[in-house]
Image 1 (cartoon, rainbow, N blue to C red):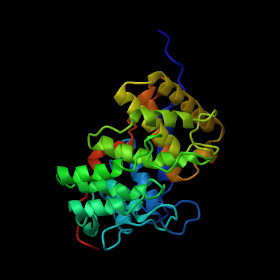
Image 2 (tube, rainbow, N blue to C red):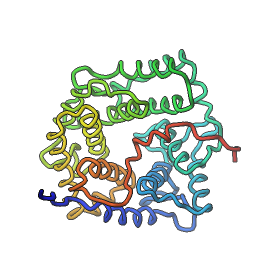
Image 3 (tube, rainbow, N blue to C red):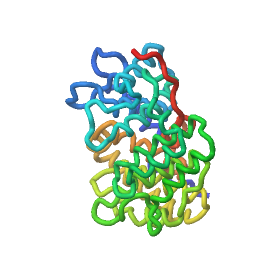
Image 4 (cartoon, rainbow, N blue to C red):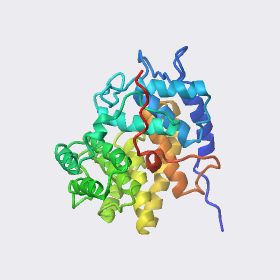
Length: 336
């Protein structure tokens, strides 16, 4: 049997990644105060990214000072009411996006929030849940789906089956029958933006032991999005929609046991595109910003799982968005 030729060395990338995130340390500030570019203050978006990068490569053996610095940097961006915010505020990322990712980061670090998570307590009533689900329209707003991610932490707090059923019933009602996507009609040059809500809701289904509805239709739609250059995004380089697409293909095809040849061909095409950027446009693509670097990490972790003979690595390189053990409310500590 002929061993396939390697397309990408994940261990080489992993070593590069460690140098990259360690280089984000902001001068003489406490560990965890990460800066990027000309930003004057640390940003929670990138602080979370660094925590997740460390976790995915099994690099959270921190000193007490380093761990405390990261936890404090995250909690510096918590509202007294319990939610978190990006600092500075990102126009296209909501406080709910900041909050669910901060809670995952704190769980990865074994940390506590500074203030109680009062907003989660308010959602634990089933009627409140149903009203909350009806107040957002993720099917017509690509950003609204991050609000629904907070439901994972309510479920992770131990609410009963009626709440879970109400939540998934409301979420599934938003799925589009034709495409299987949770998003507005997938048309136009920027159609790949509809991958993000579909990815997030699929992650929530899998994390709580549920099958992704209309899986075959999701596969059809995702496969149709891949471009000749191997990307799923319309830009010149990989982005989060590429990570979303690869995860959906691998998860659904692997679960259903269907269309593996098509899916693996799409994986190889994506891996070759990524290798091309690594060889010829590393600074522009892999150093675009820490958040996009995390998306590339996610792509490589999925590819390593799907085609291990071609996207190779012996060191740990895990997919952080599927880490269901962290979808629970962290403990609350004394406010400071």
